[in-house]
Length: 412
Length: 161
Ligand SMILES: [Fe+2]
Image 1 (cartoon, each protein chain N blue to C red):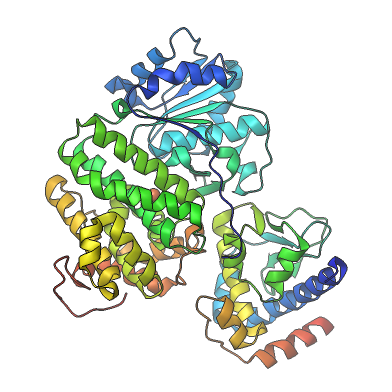
Image 2: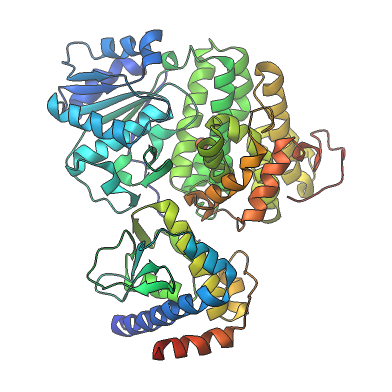
């Protein structure tokens, strides 16, 4: 790469007691009447209350919790209207990817003085607008949305997901507090953790990779390797929860500056067409996507083995076999998560209808993530990946973690 | 190279690109299928840097694409940040994917619909650039369904029509 750009101006407050600084951080941003965005589930679980309590004496302009999992343009437009009506001066978003992406859309609308998000679609084309202090508090360790310049918001009228890419979407502050993810059930912890791993691996291997995104991606892979199994087994471990939240932020910052690839393109399409949860789709598709890219990513995958499996495995694996071993380690991690939480490893288990695969493939080809995938993504290639993942053929390819050949190598 | 000269080259390549898209709509089934997938009258603009050359087109039911007035607003605009950046792509030194990776352009409008436009331009590049050239910039060079010389020749005639 001759030229690259990297941006991550978000202040990170991470670890024990991070949430306690919320009021201070807002004050430093010049805010005194924030709007709090969240969802009904977090309100019910009492997580939202912890946040409103952390605001202390600060006056809350409005609390909005009517954000669905599949948030859309209409919700964003409505929240922006309420923000103005209730005279708010900052945004605090508490939730998973949907809430954070919704908040990003609202921020864009308010900052640009616009009424409809549809006017602001695009990539890197929005100038800085009005200051709208924005604090993101993720409640899953997965999407990394608190560190990305990307928002995916559904246009329900046209039944398509719209992508917004702009540095104006980046929060001013991200608060990673282990208390926010402690109640996450093991299955969702596993699914969102695999999303993080996927962000890091794709960020490290796509065409837009650069020295800074590489540093973030490798740090994220190491944290996932060391903590994902632990956090699924011991969900109450604040240390493991913090580590995974850090991994999610790091991987988010990595892919925000380097993009993702074919796994995400297919995953977004499976989400849109077959309604498969994003993390589940990542978990199912990741090895197949890596096998597809292996031809041009041998060296990068080989390097990642050190971070995922540790120095001992790395040094004991012959250089020529490290890429395959890396894929095998991902498959092994996936297998362990499957046994512990029942996380699906095939599209069949996830309930995808193979009759819809042609539609999924067409949708995937129009996803921005294919543009910098290291290998050209074609309709036929996507179909082969989907078919391989339907009954889980790909784990038999390559090598097992013990280094023994299980089956003849085949390329997707 | 002077900016003015780069602007002239960019304008020339855009003219060839536009005509070849019309030719390929007839002669290449994949290009036709992509363009037929665009909604009618969907408009694109390719702006080659501030004050630079502009290709403005819209989908037309029978001809594939037709010119759009430069002043008309397009639903999708790819805007190169500099004349030099646009030149690197239009002269075949960089692919659109490279240009995206290096943040050479911005995009206003729907990213999903733009991907089809990008594929169409990549098909055209396979015809317009020598194979050795396109192999250097494209991850995979699409098979040609007709000869490059024929596309150039028809593109010249296209001008006369
Ligand atoms: Fe993801």
